[in-house]
Amino acid sequence: MRLARLKGELVDRSQAIAHVFKLARAERDAWLNWPARVSAQMAATLGVDPHTMHVALESAVREHLQELGELRPRVD
Image 1: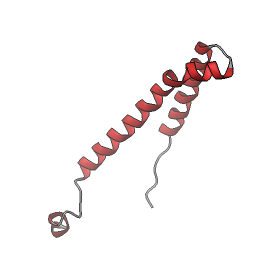
Image 2: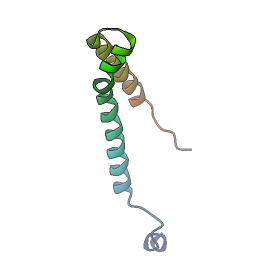
Image 3: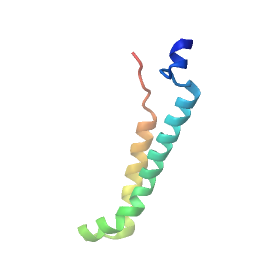
Image 4: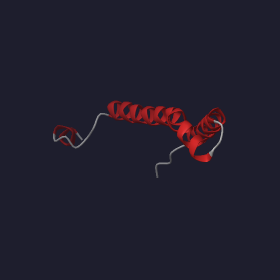
């Protein structure tokens, strides 16, 4: 294992976990900001109230993220 590490074939576990956590947080934050970015345009396209659209999208996104947060990865 020492040779593999010296050859750059292994990564530090704590660094890998921190990187994955950072990527997941960025993905979550992007989704949480999405309703604010698109709701007004979607509401105009559909001819509905912008606030109603924003609330509906935000609720759906939060519910979906909650469901994703309950998933547990399997490593077989």
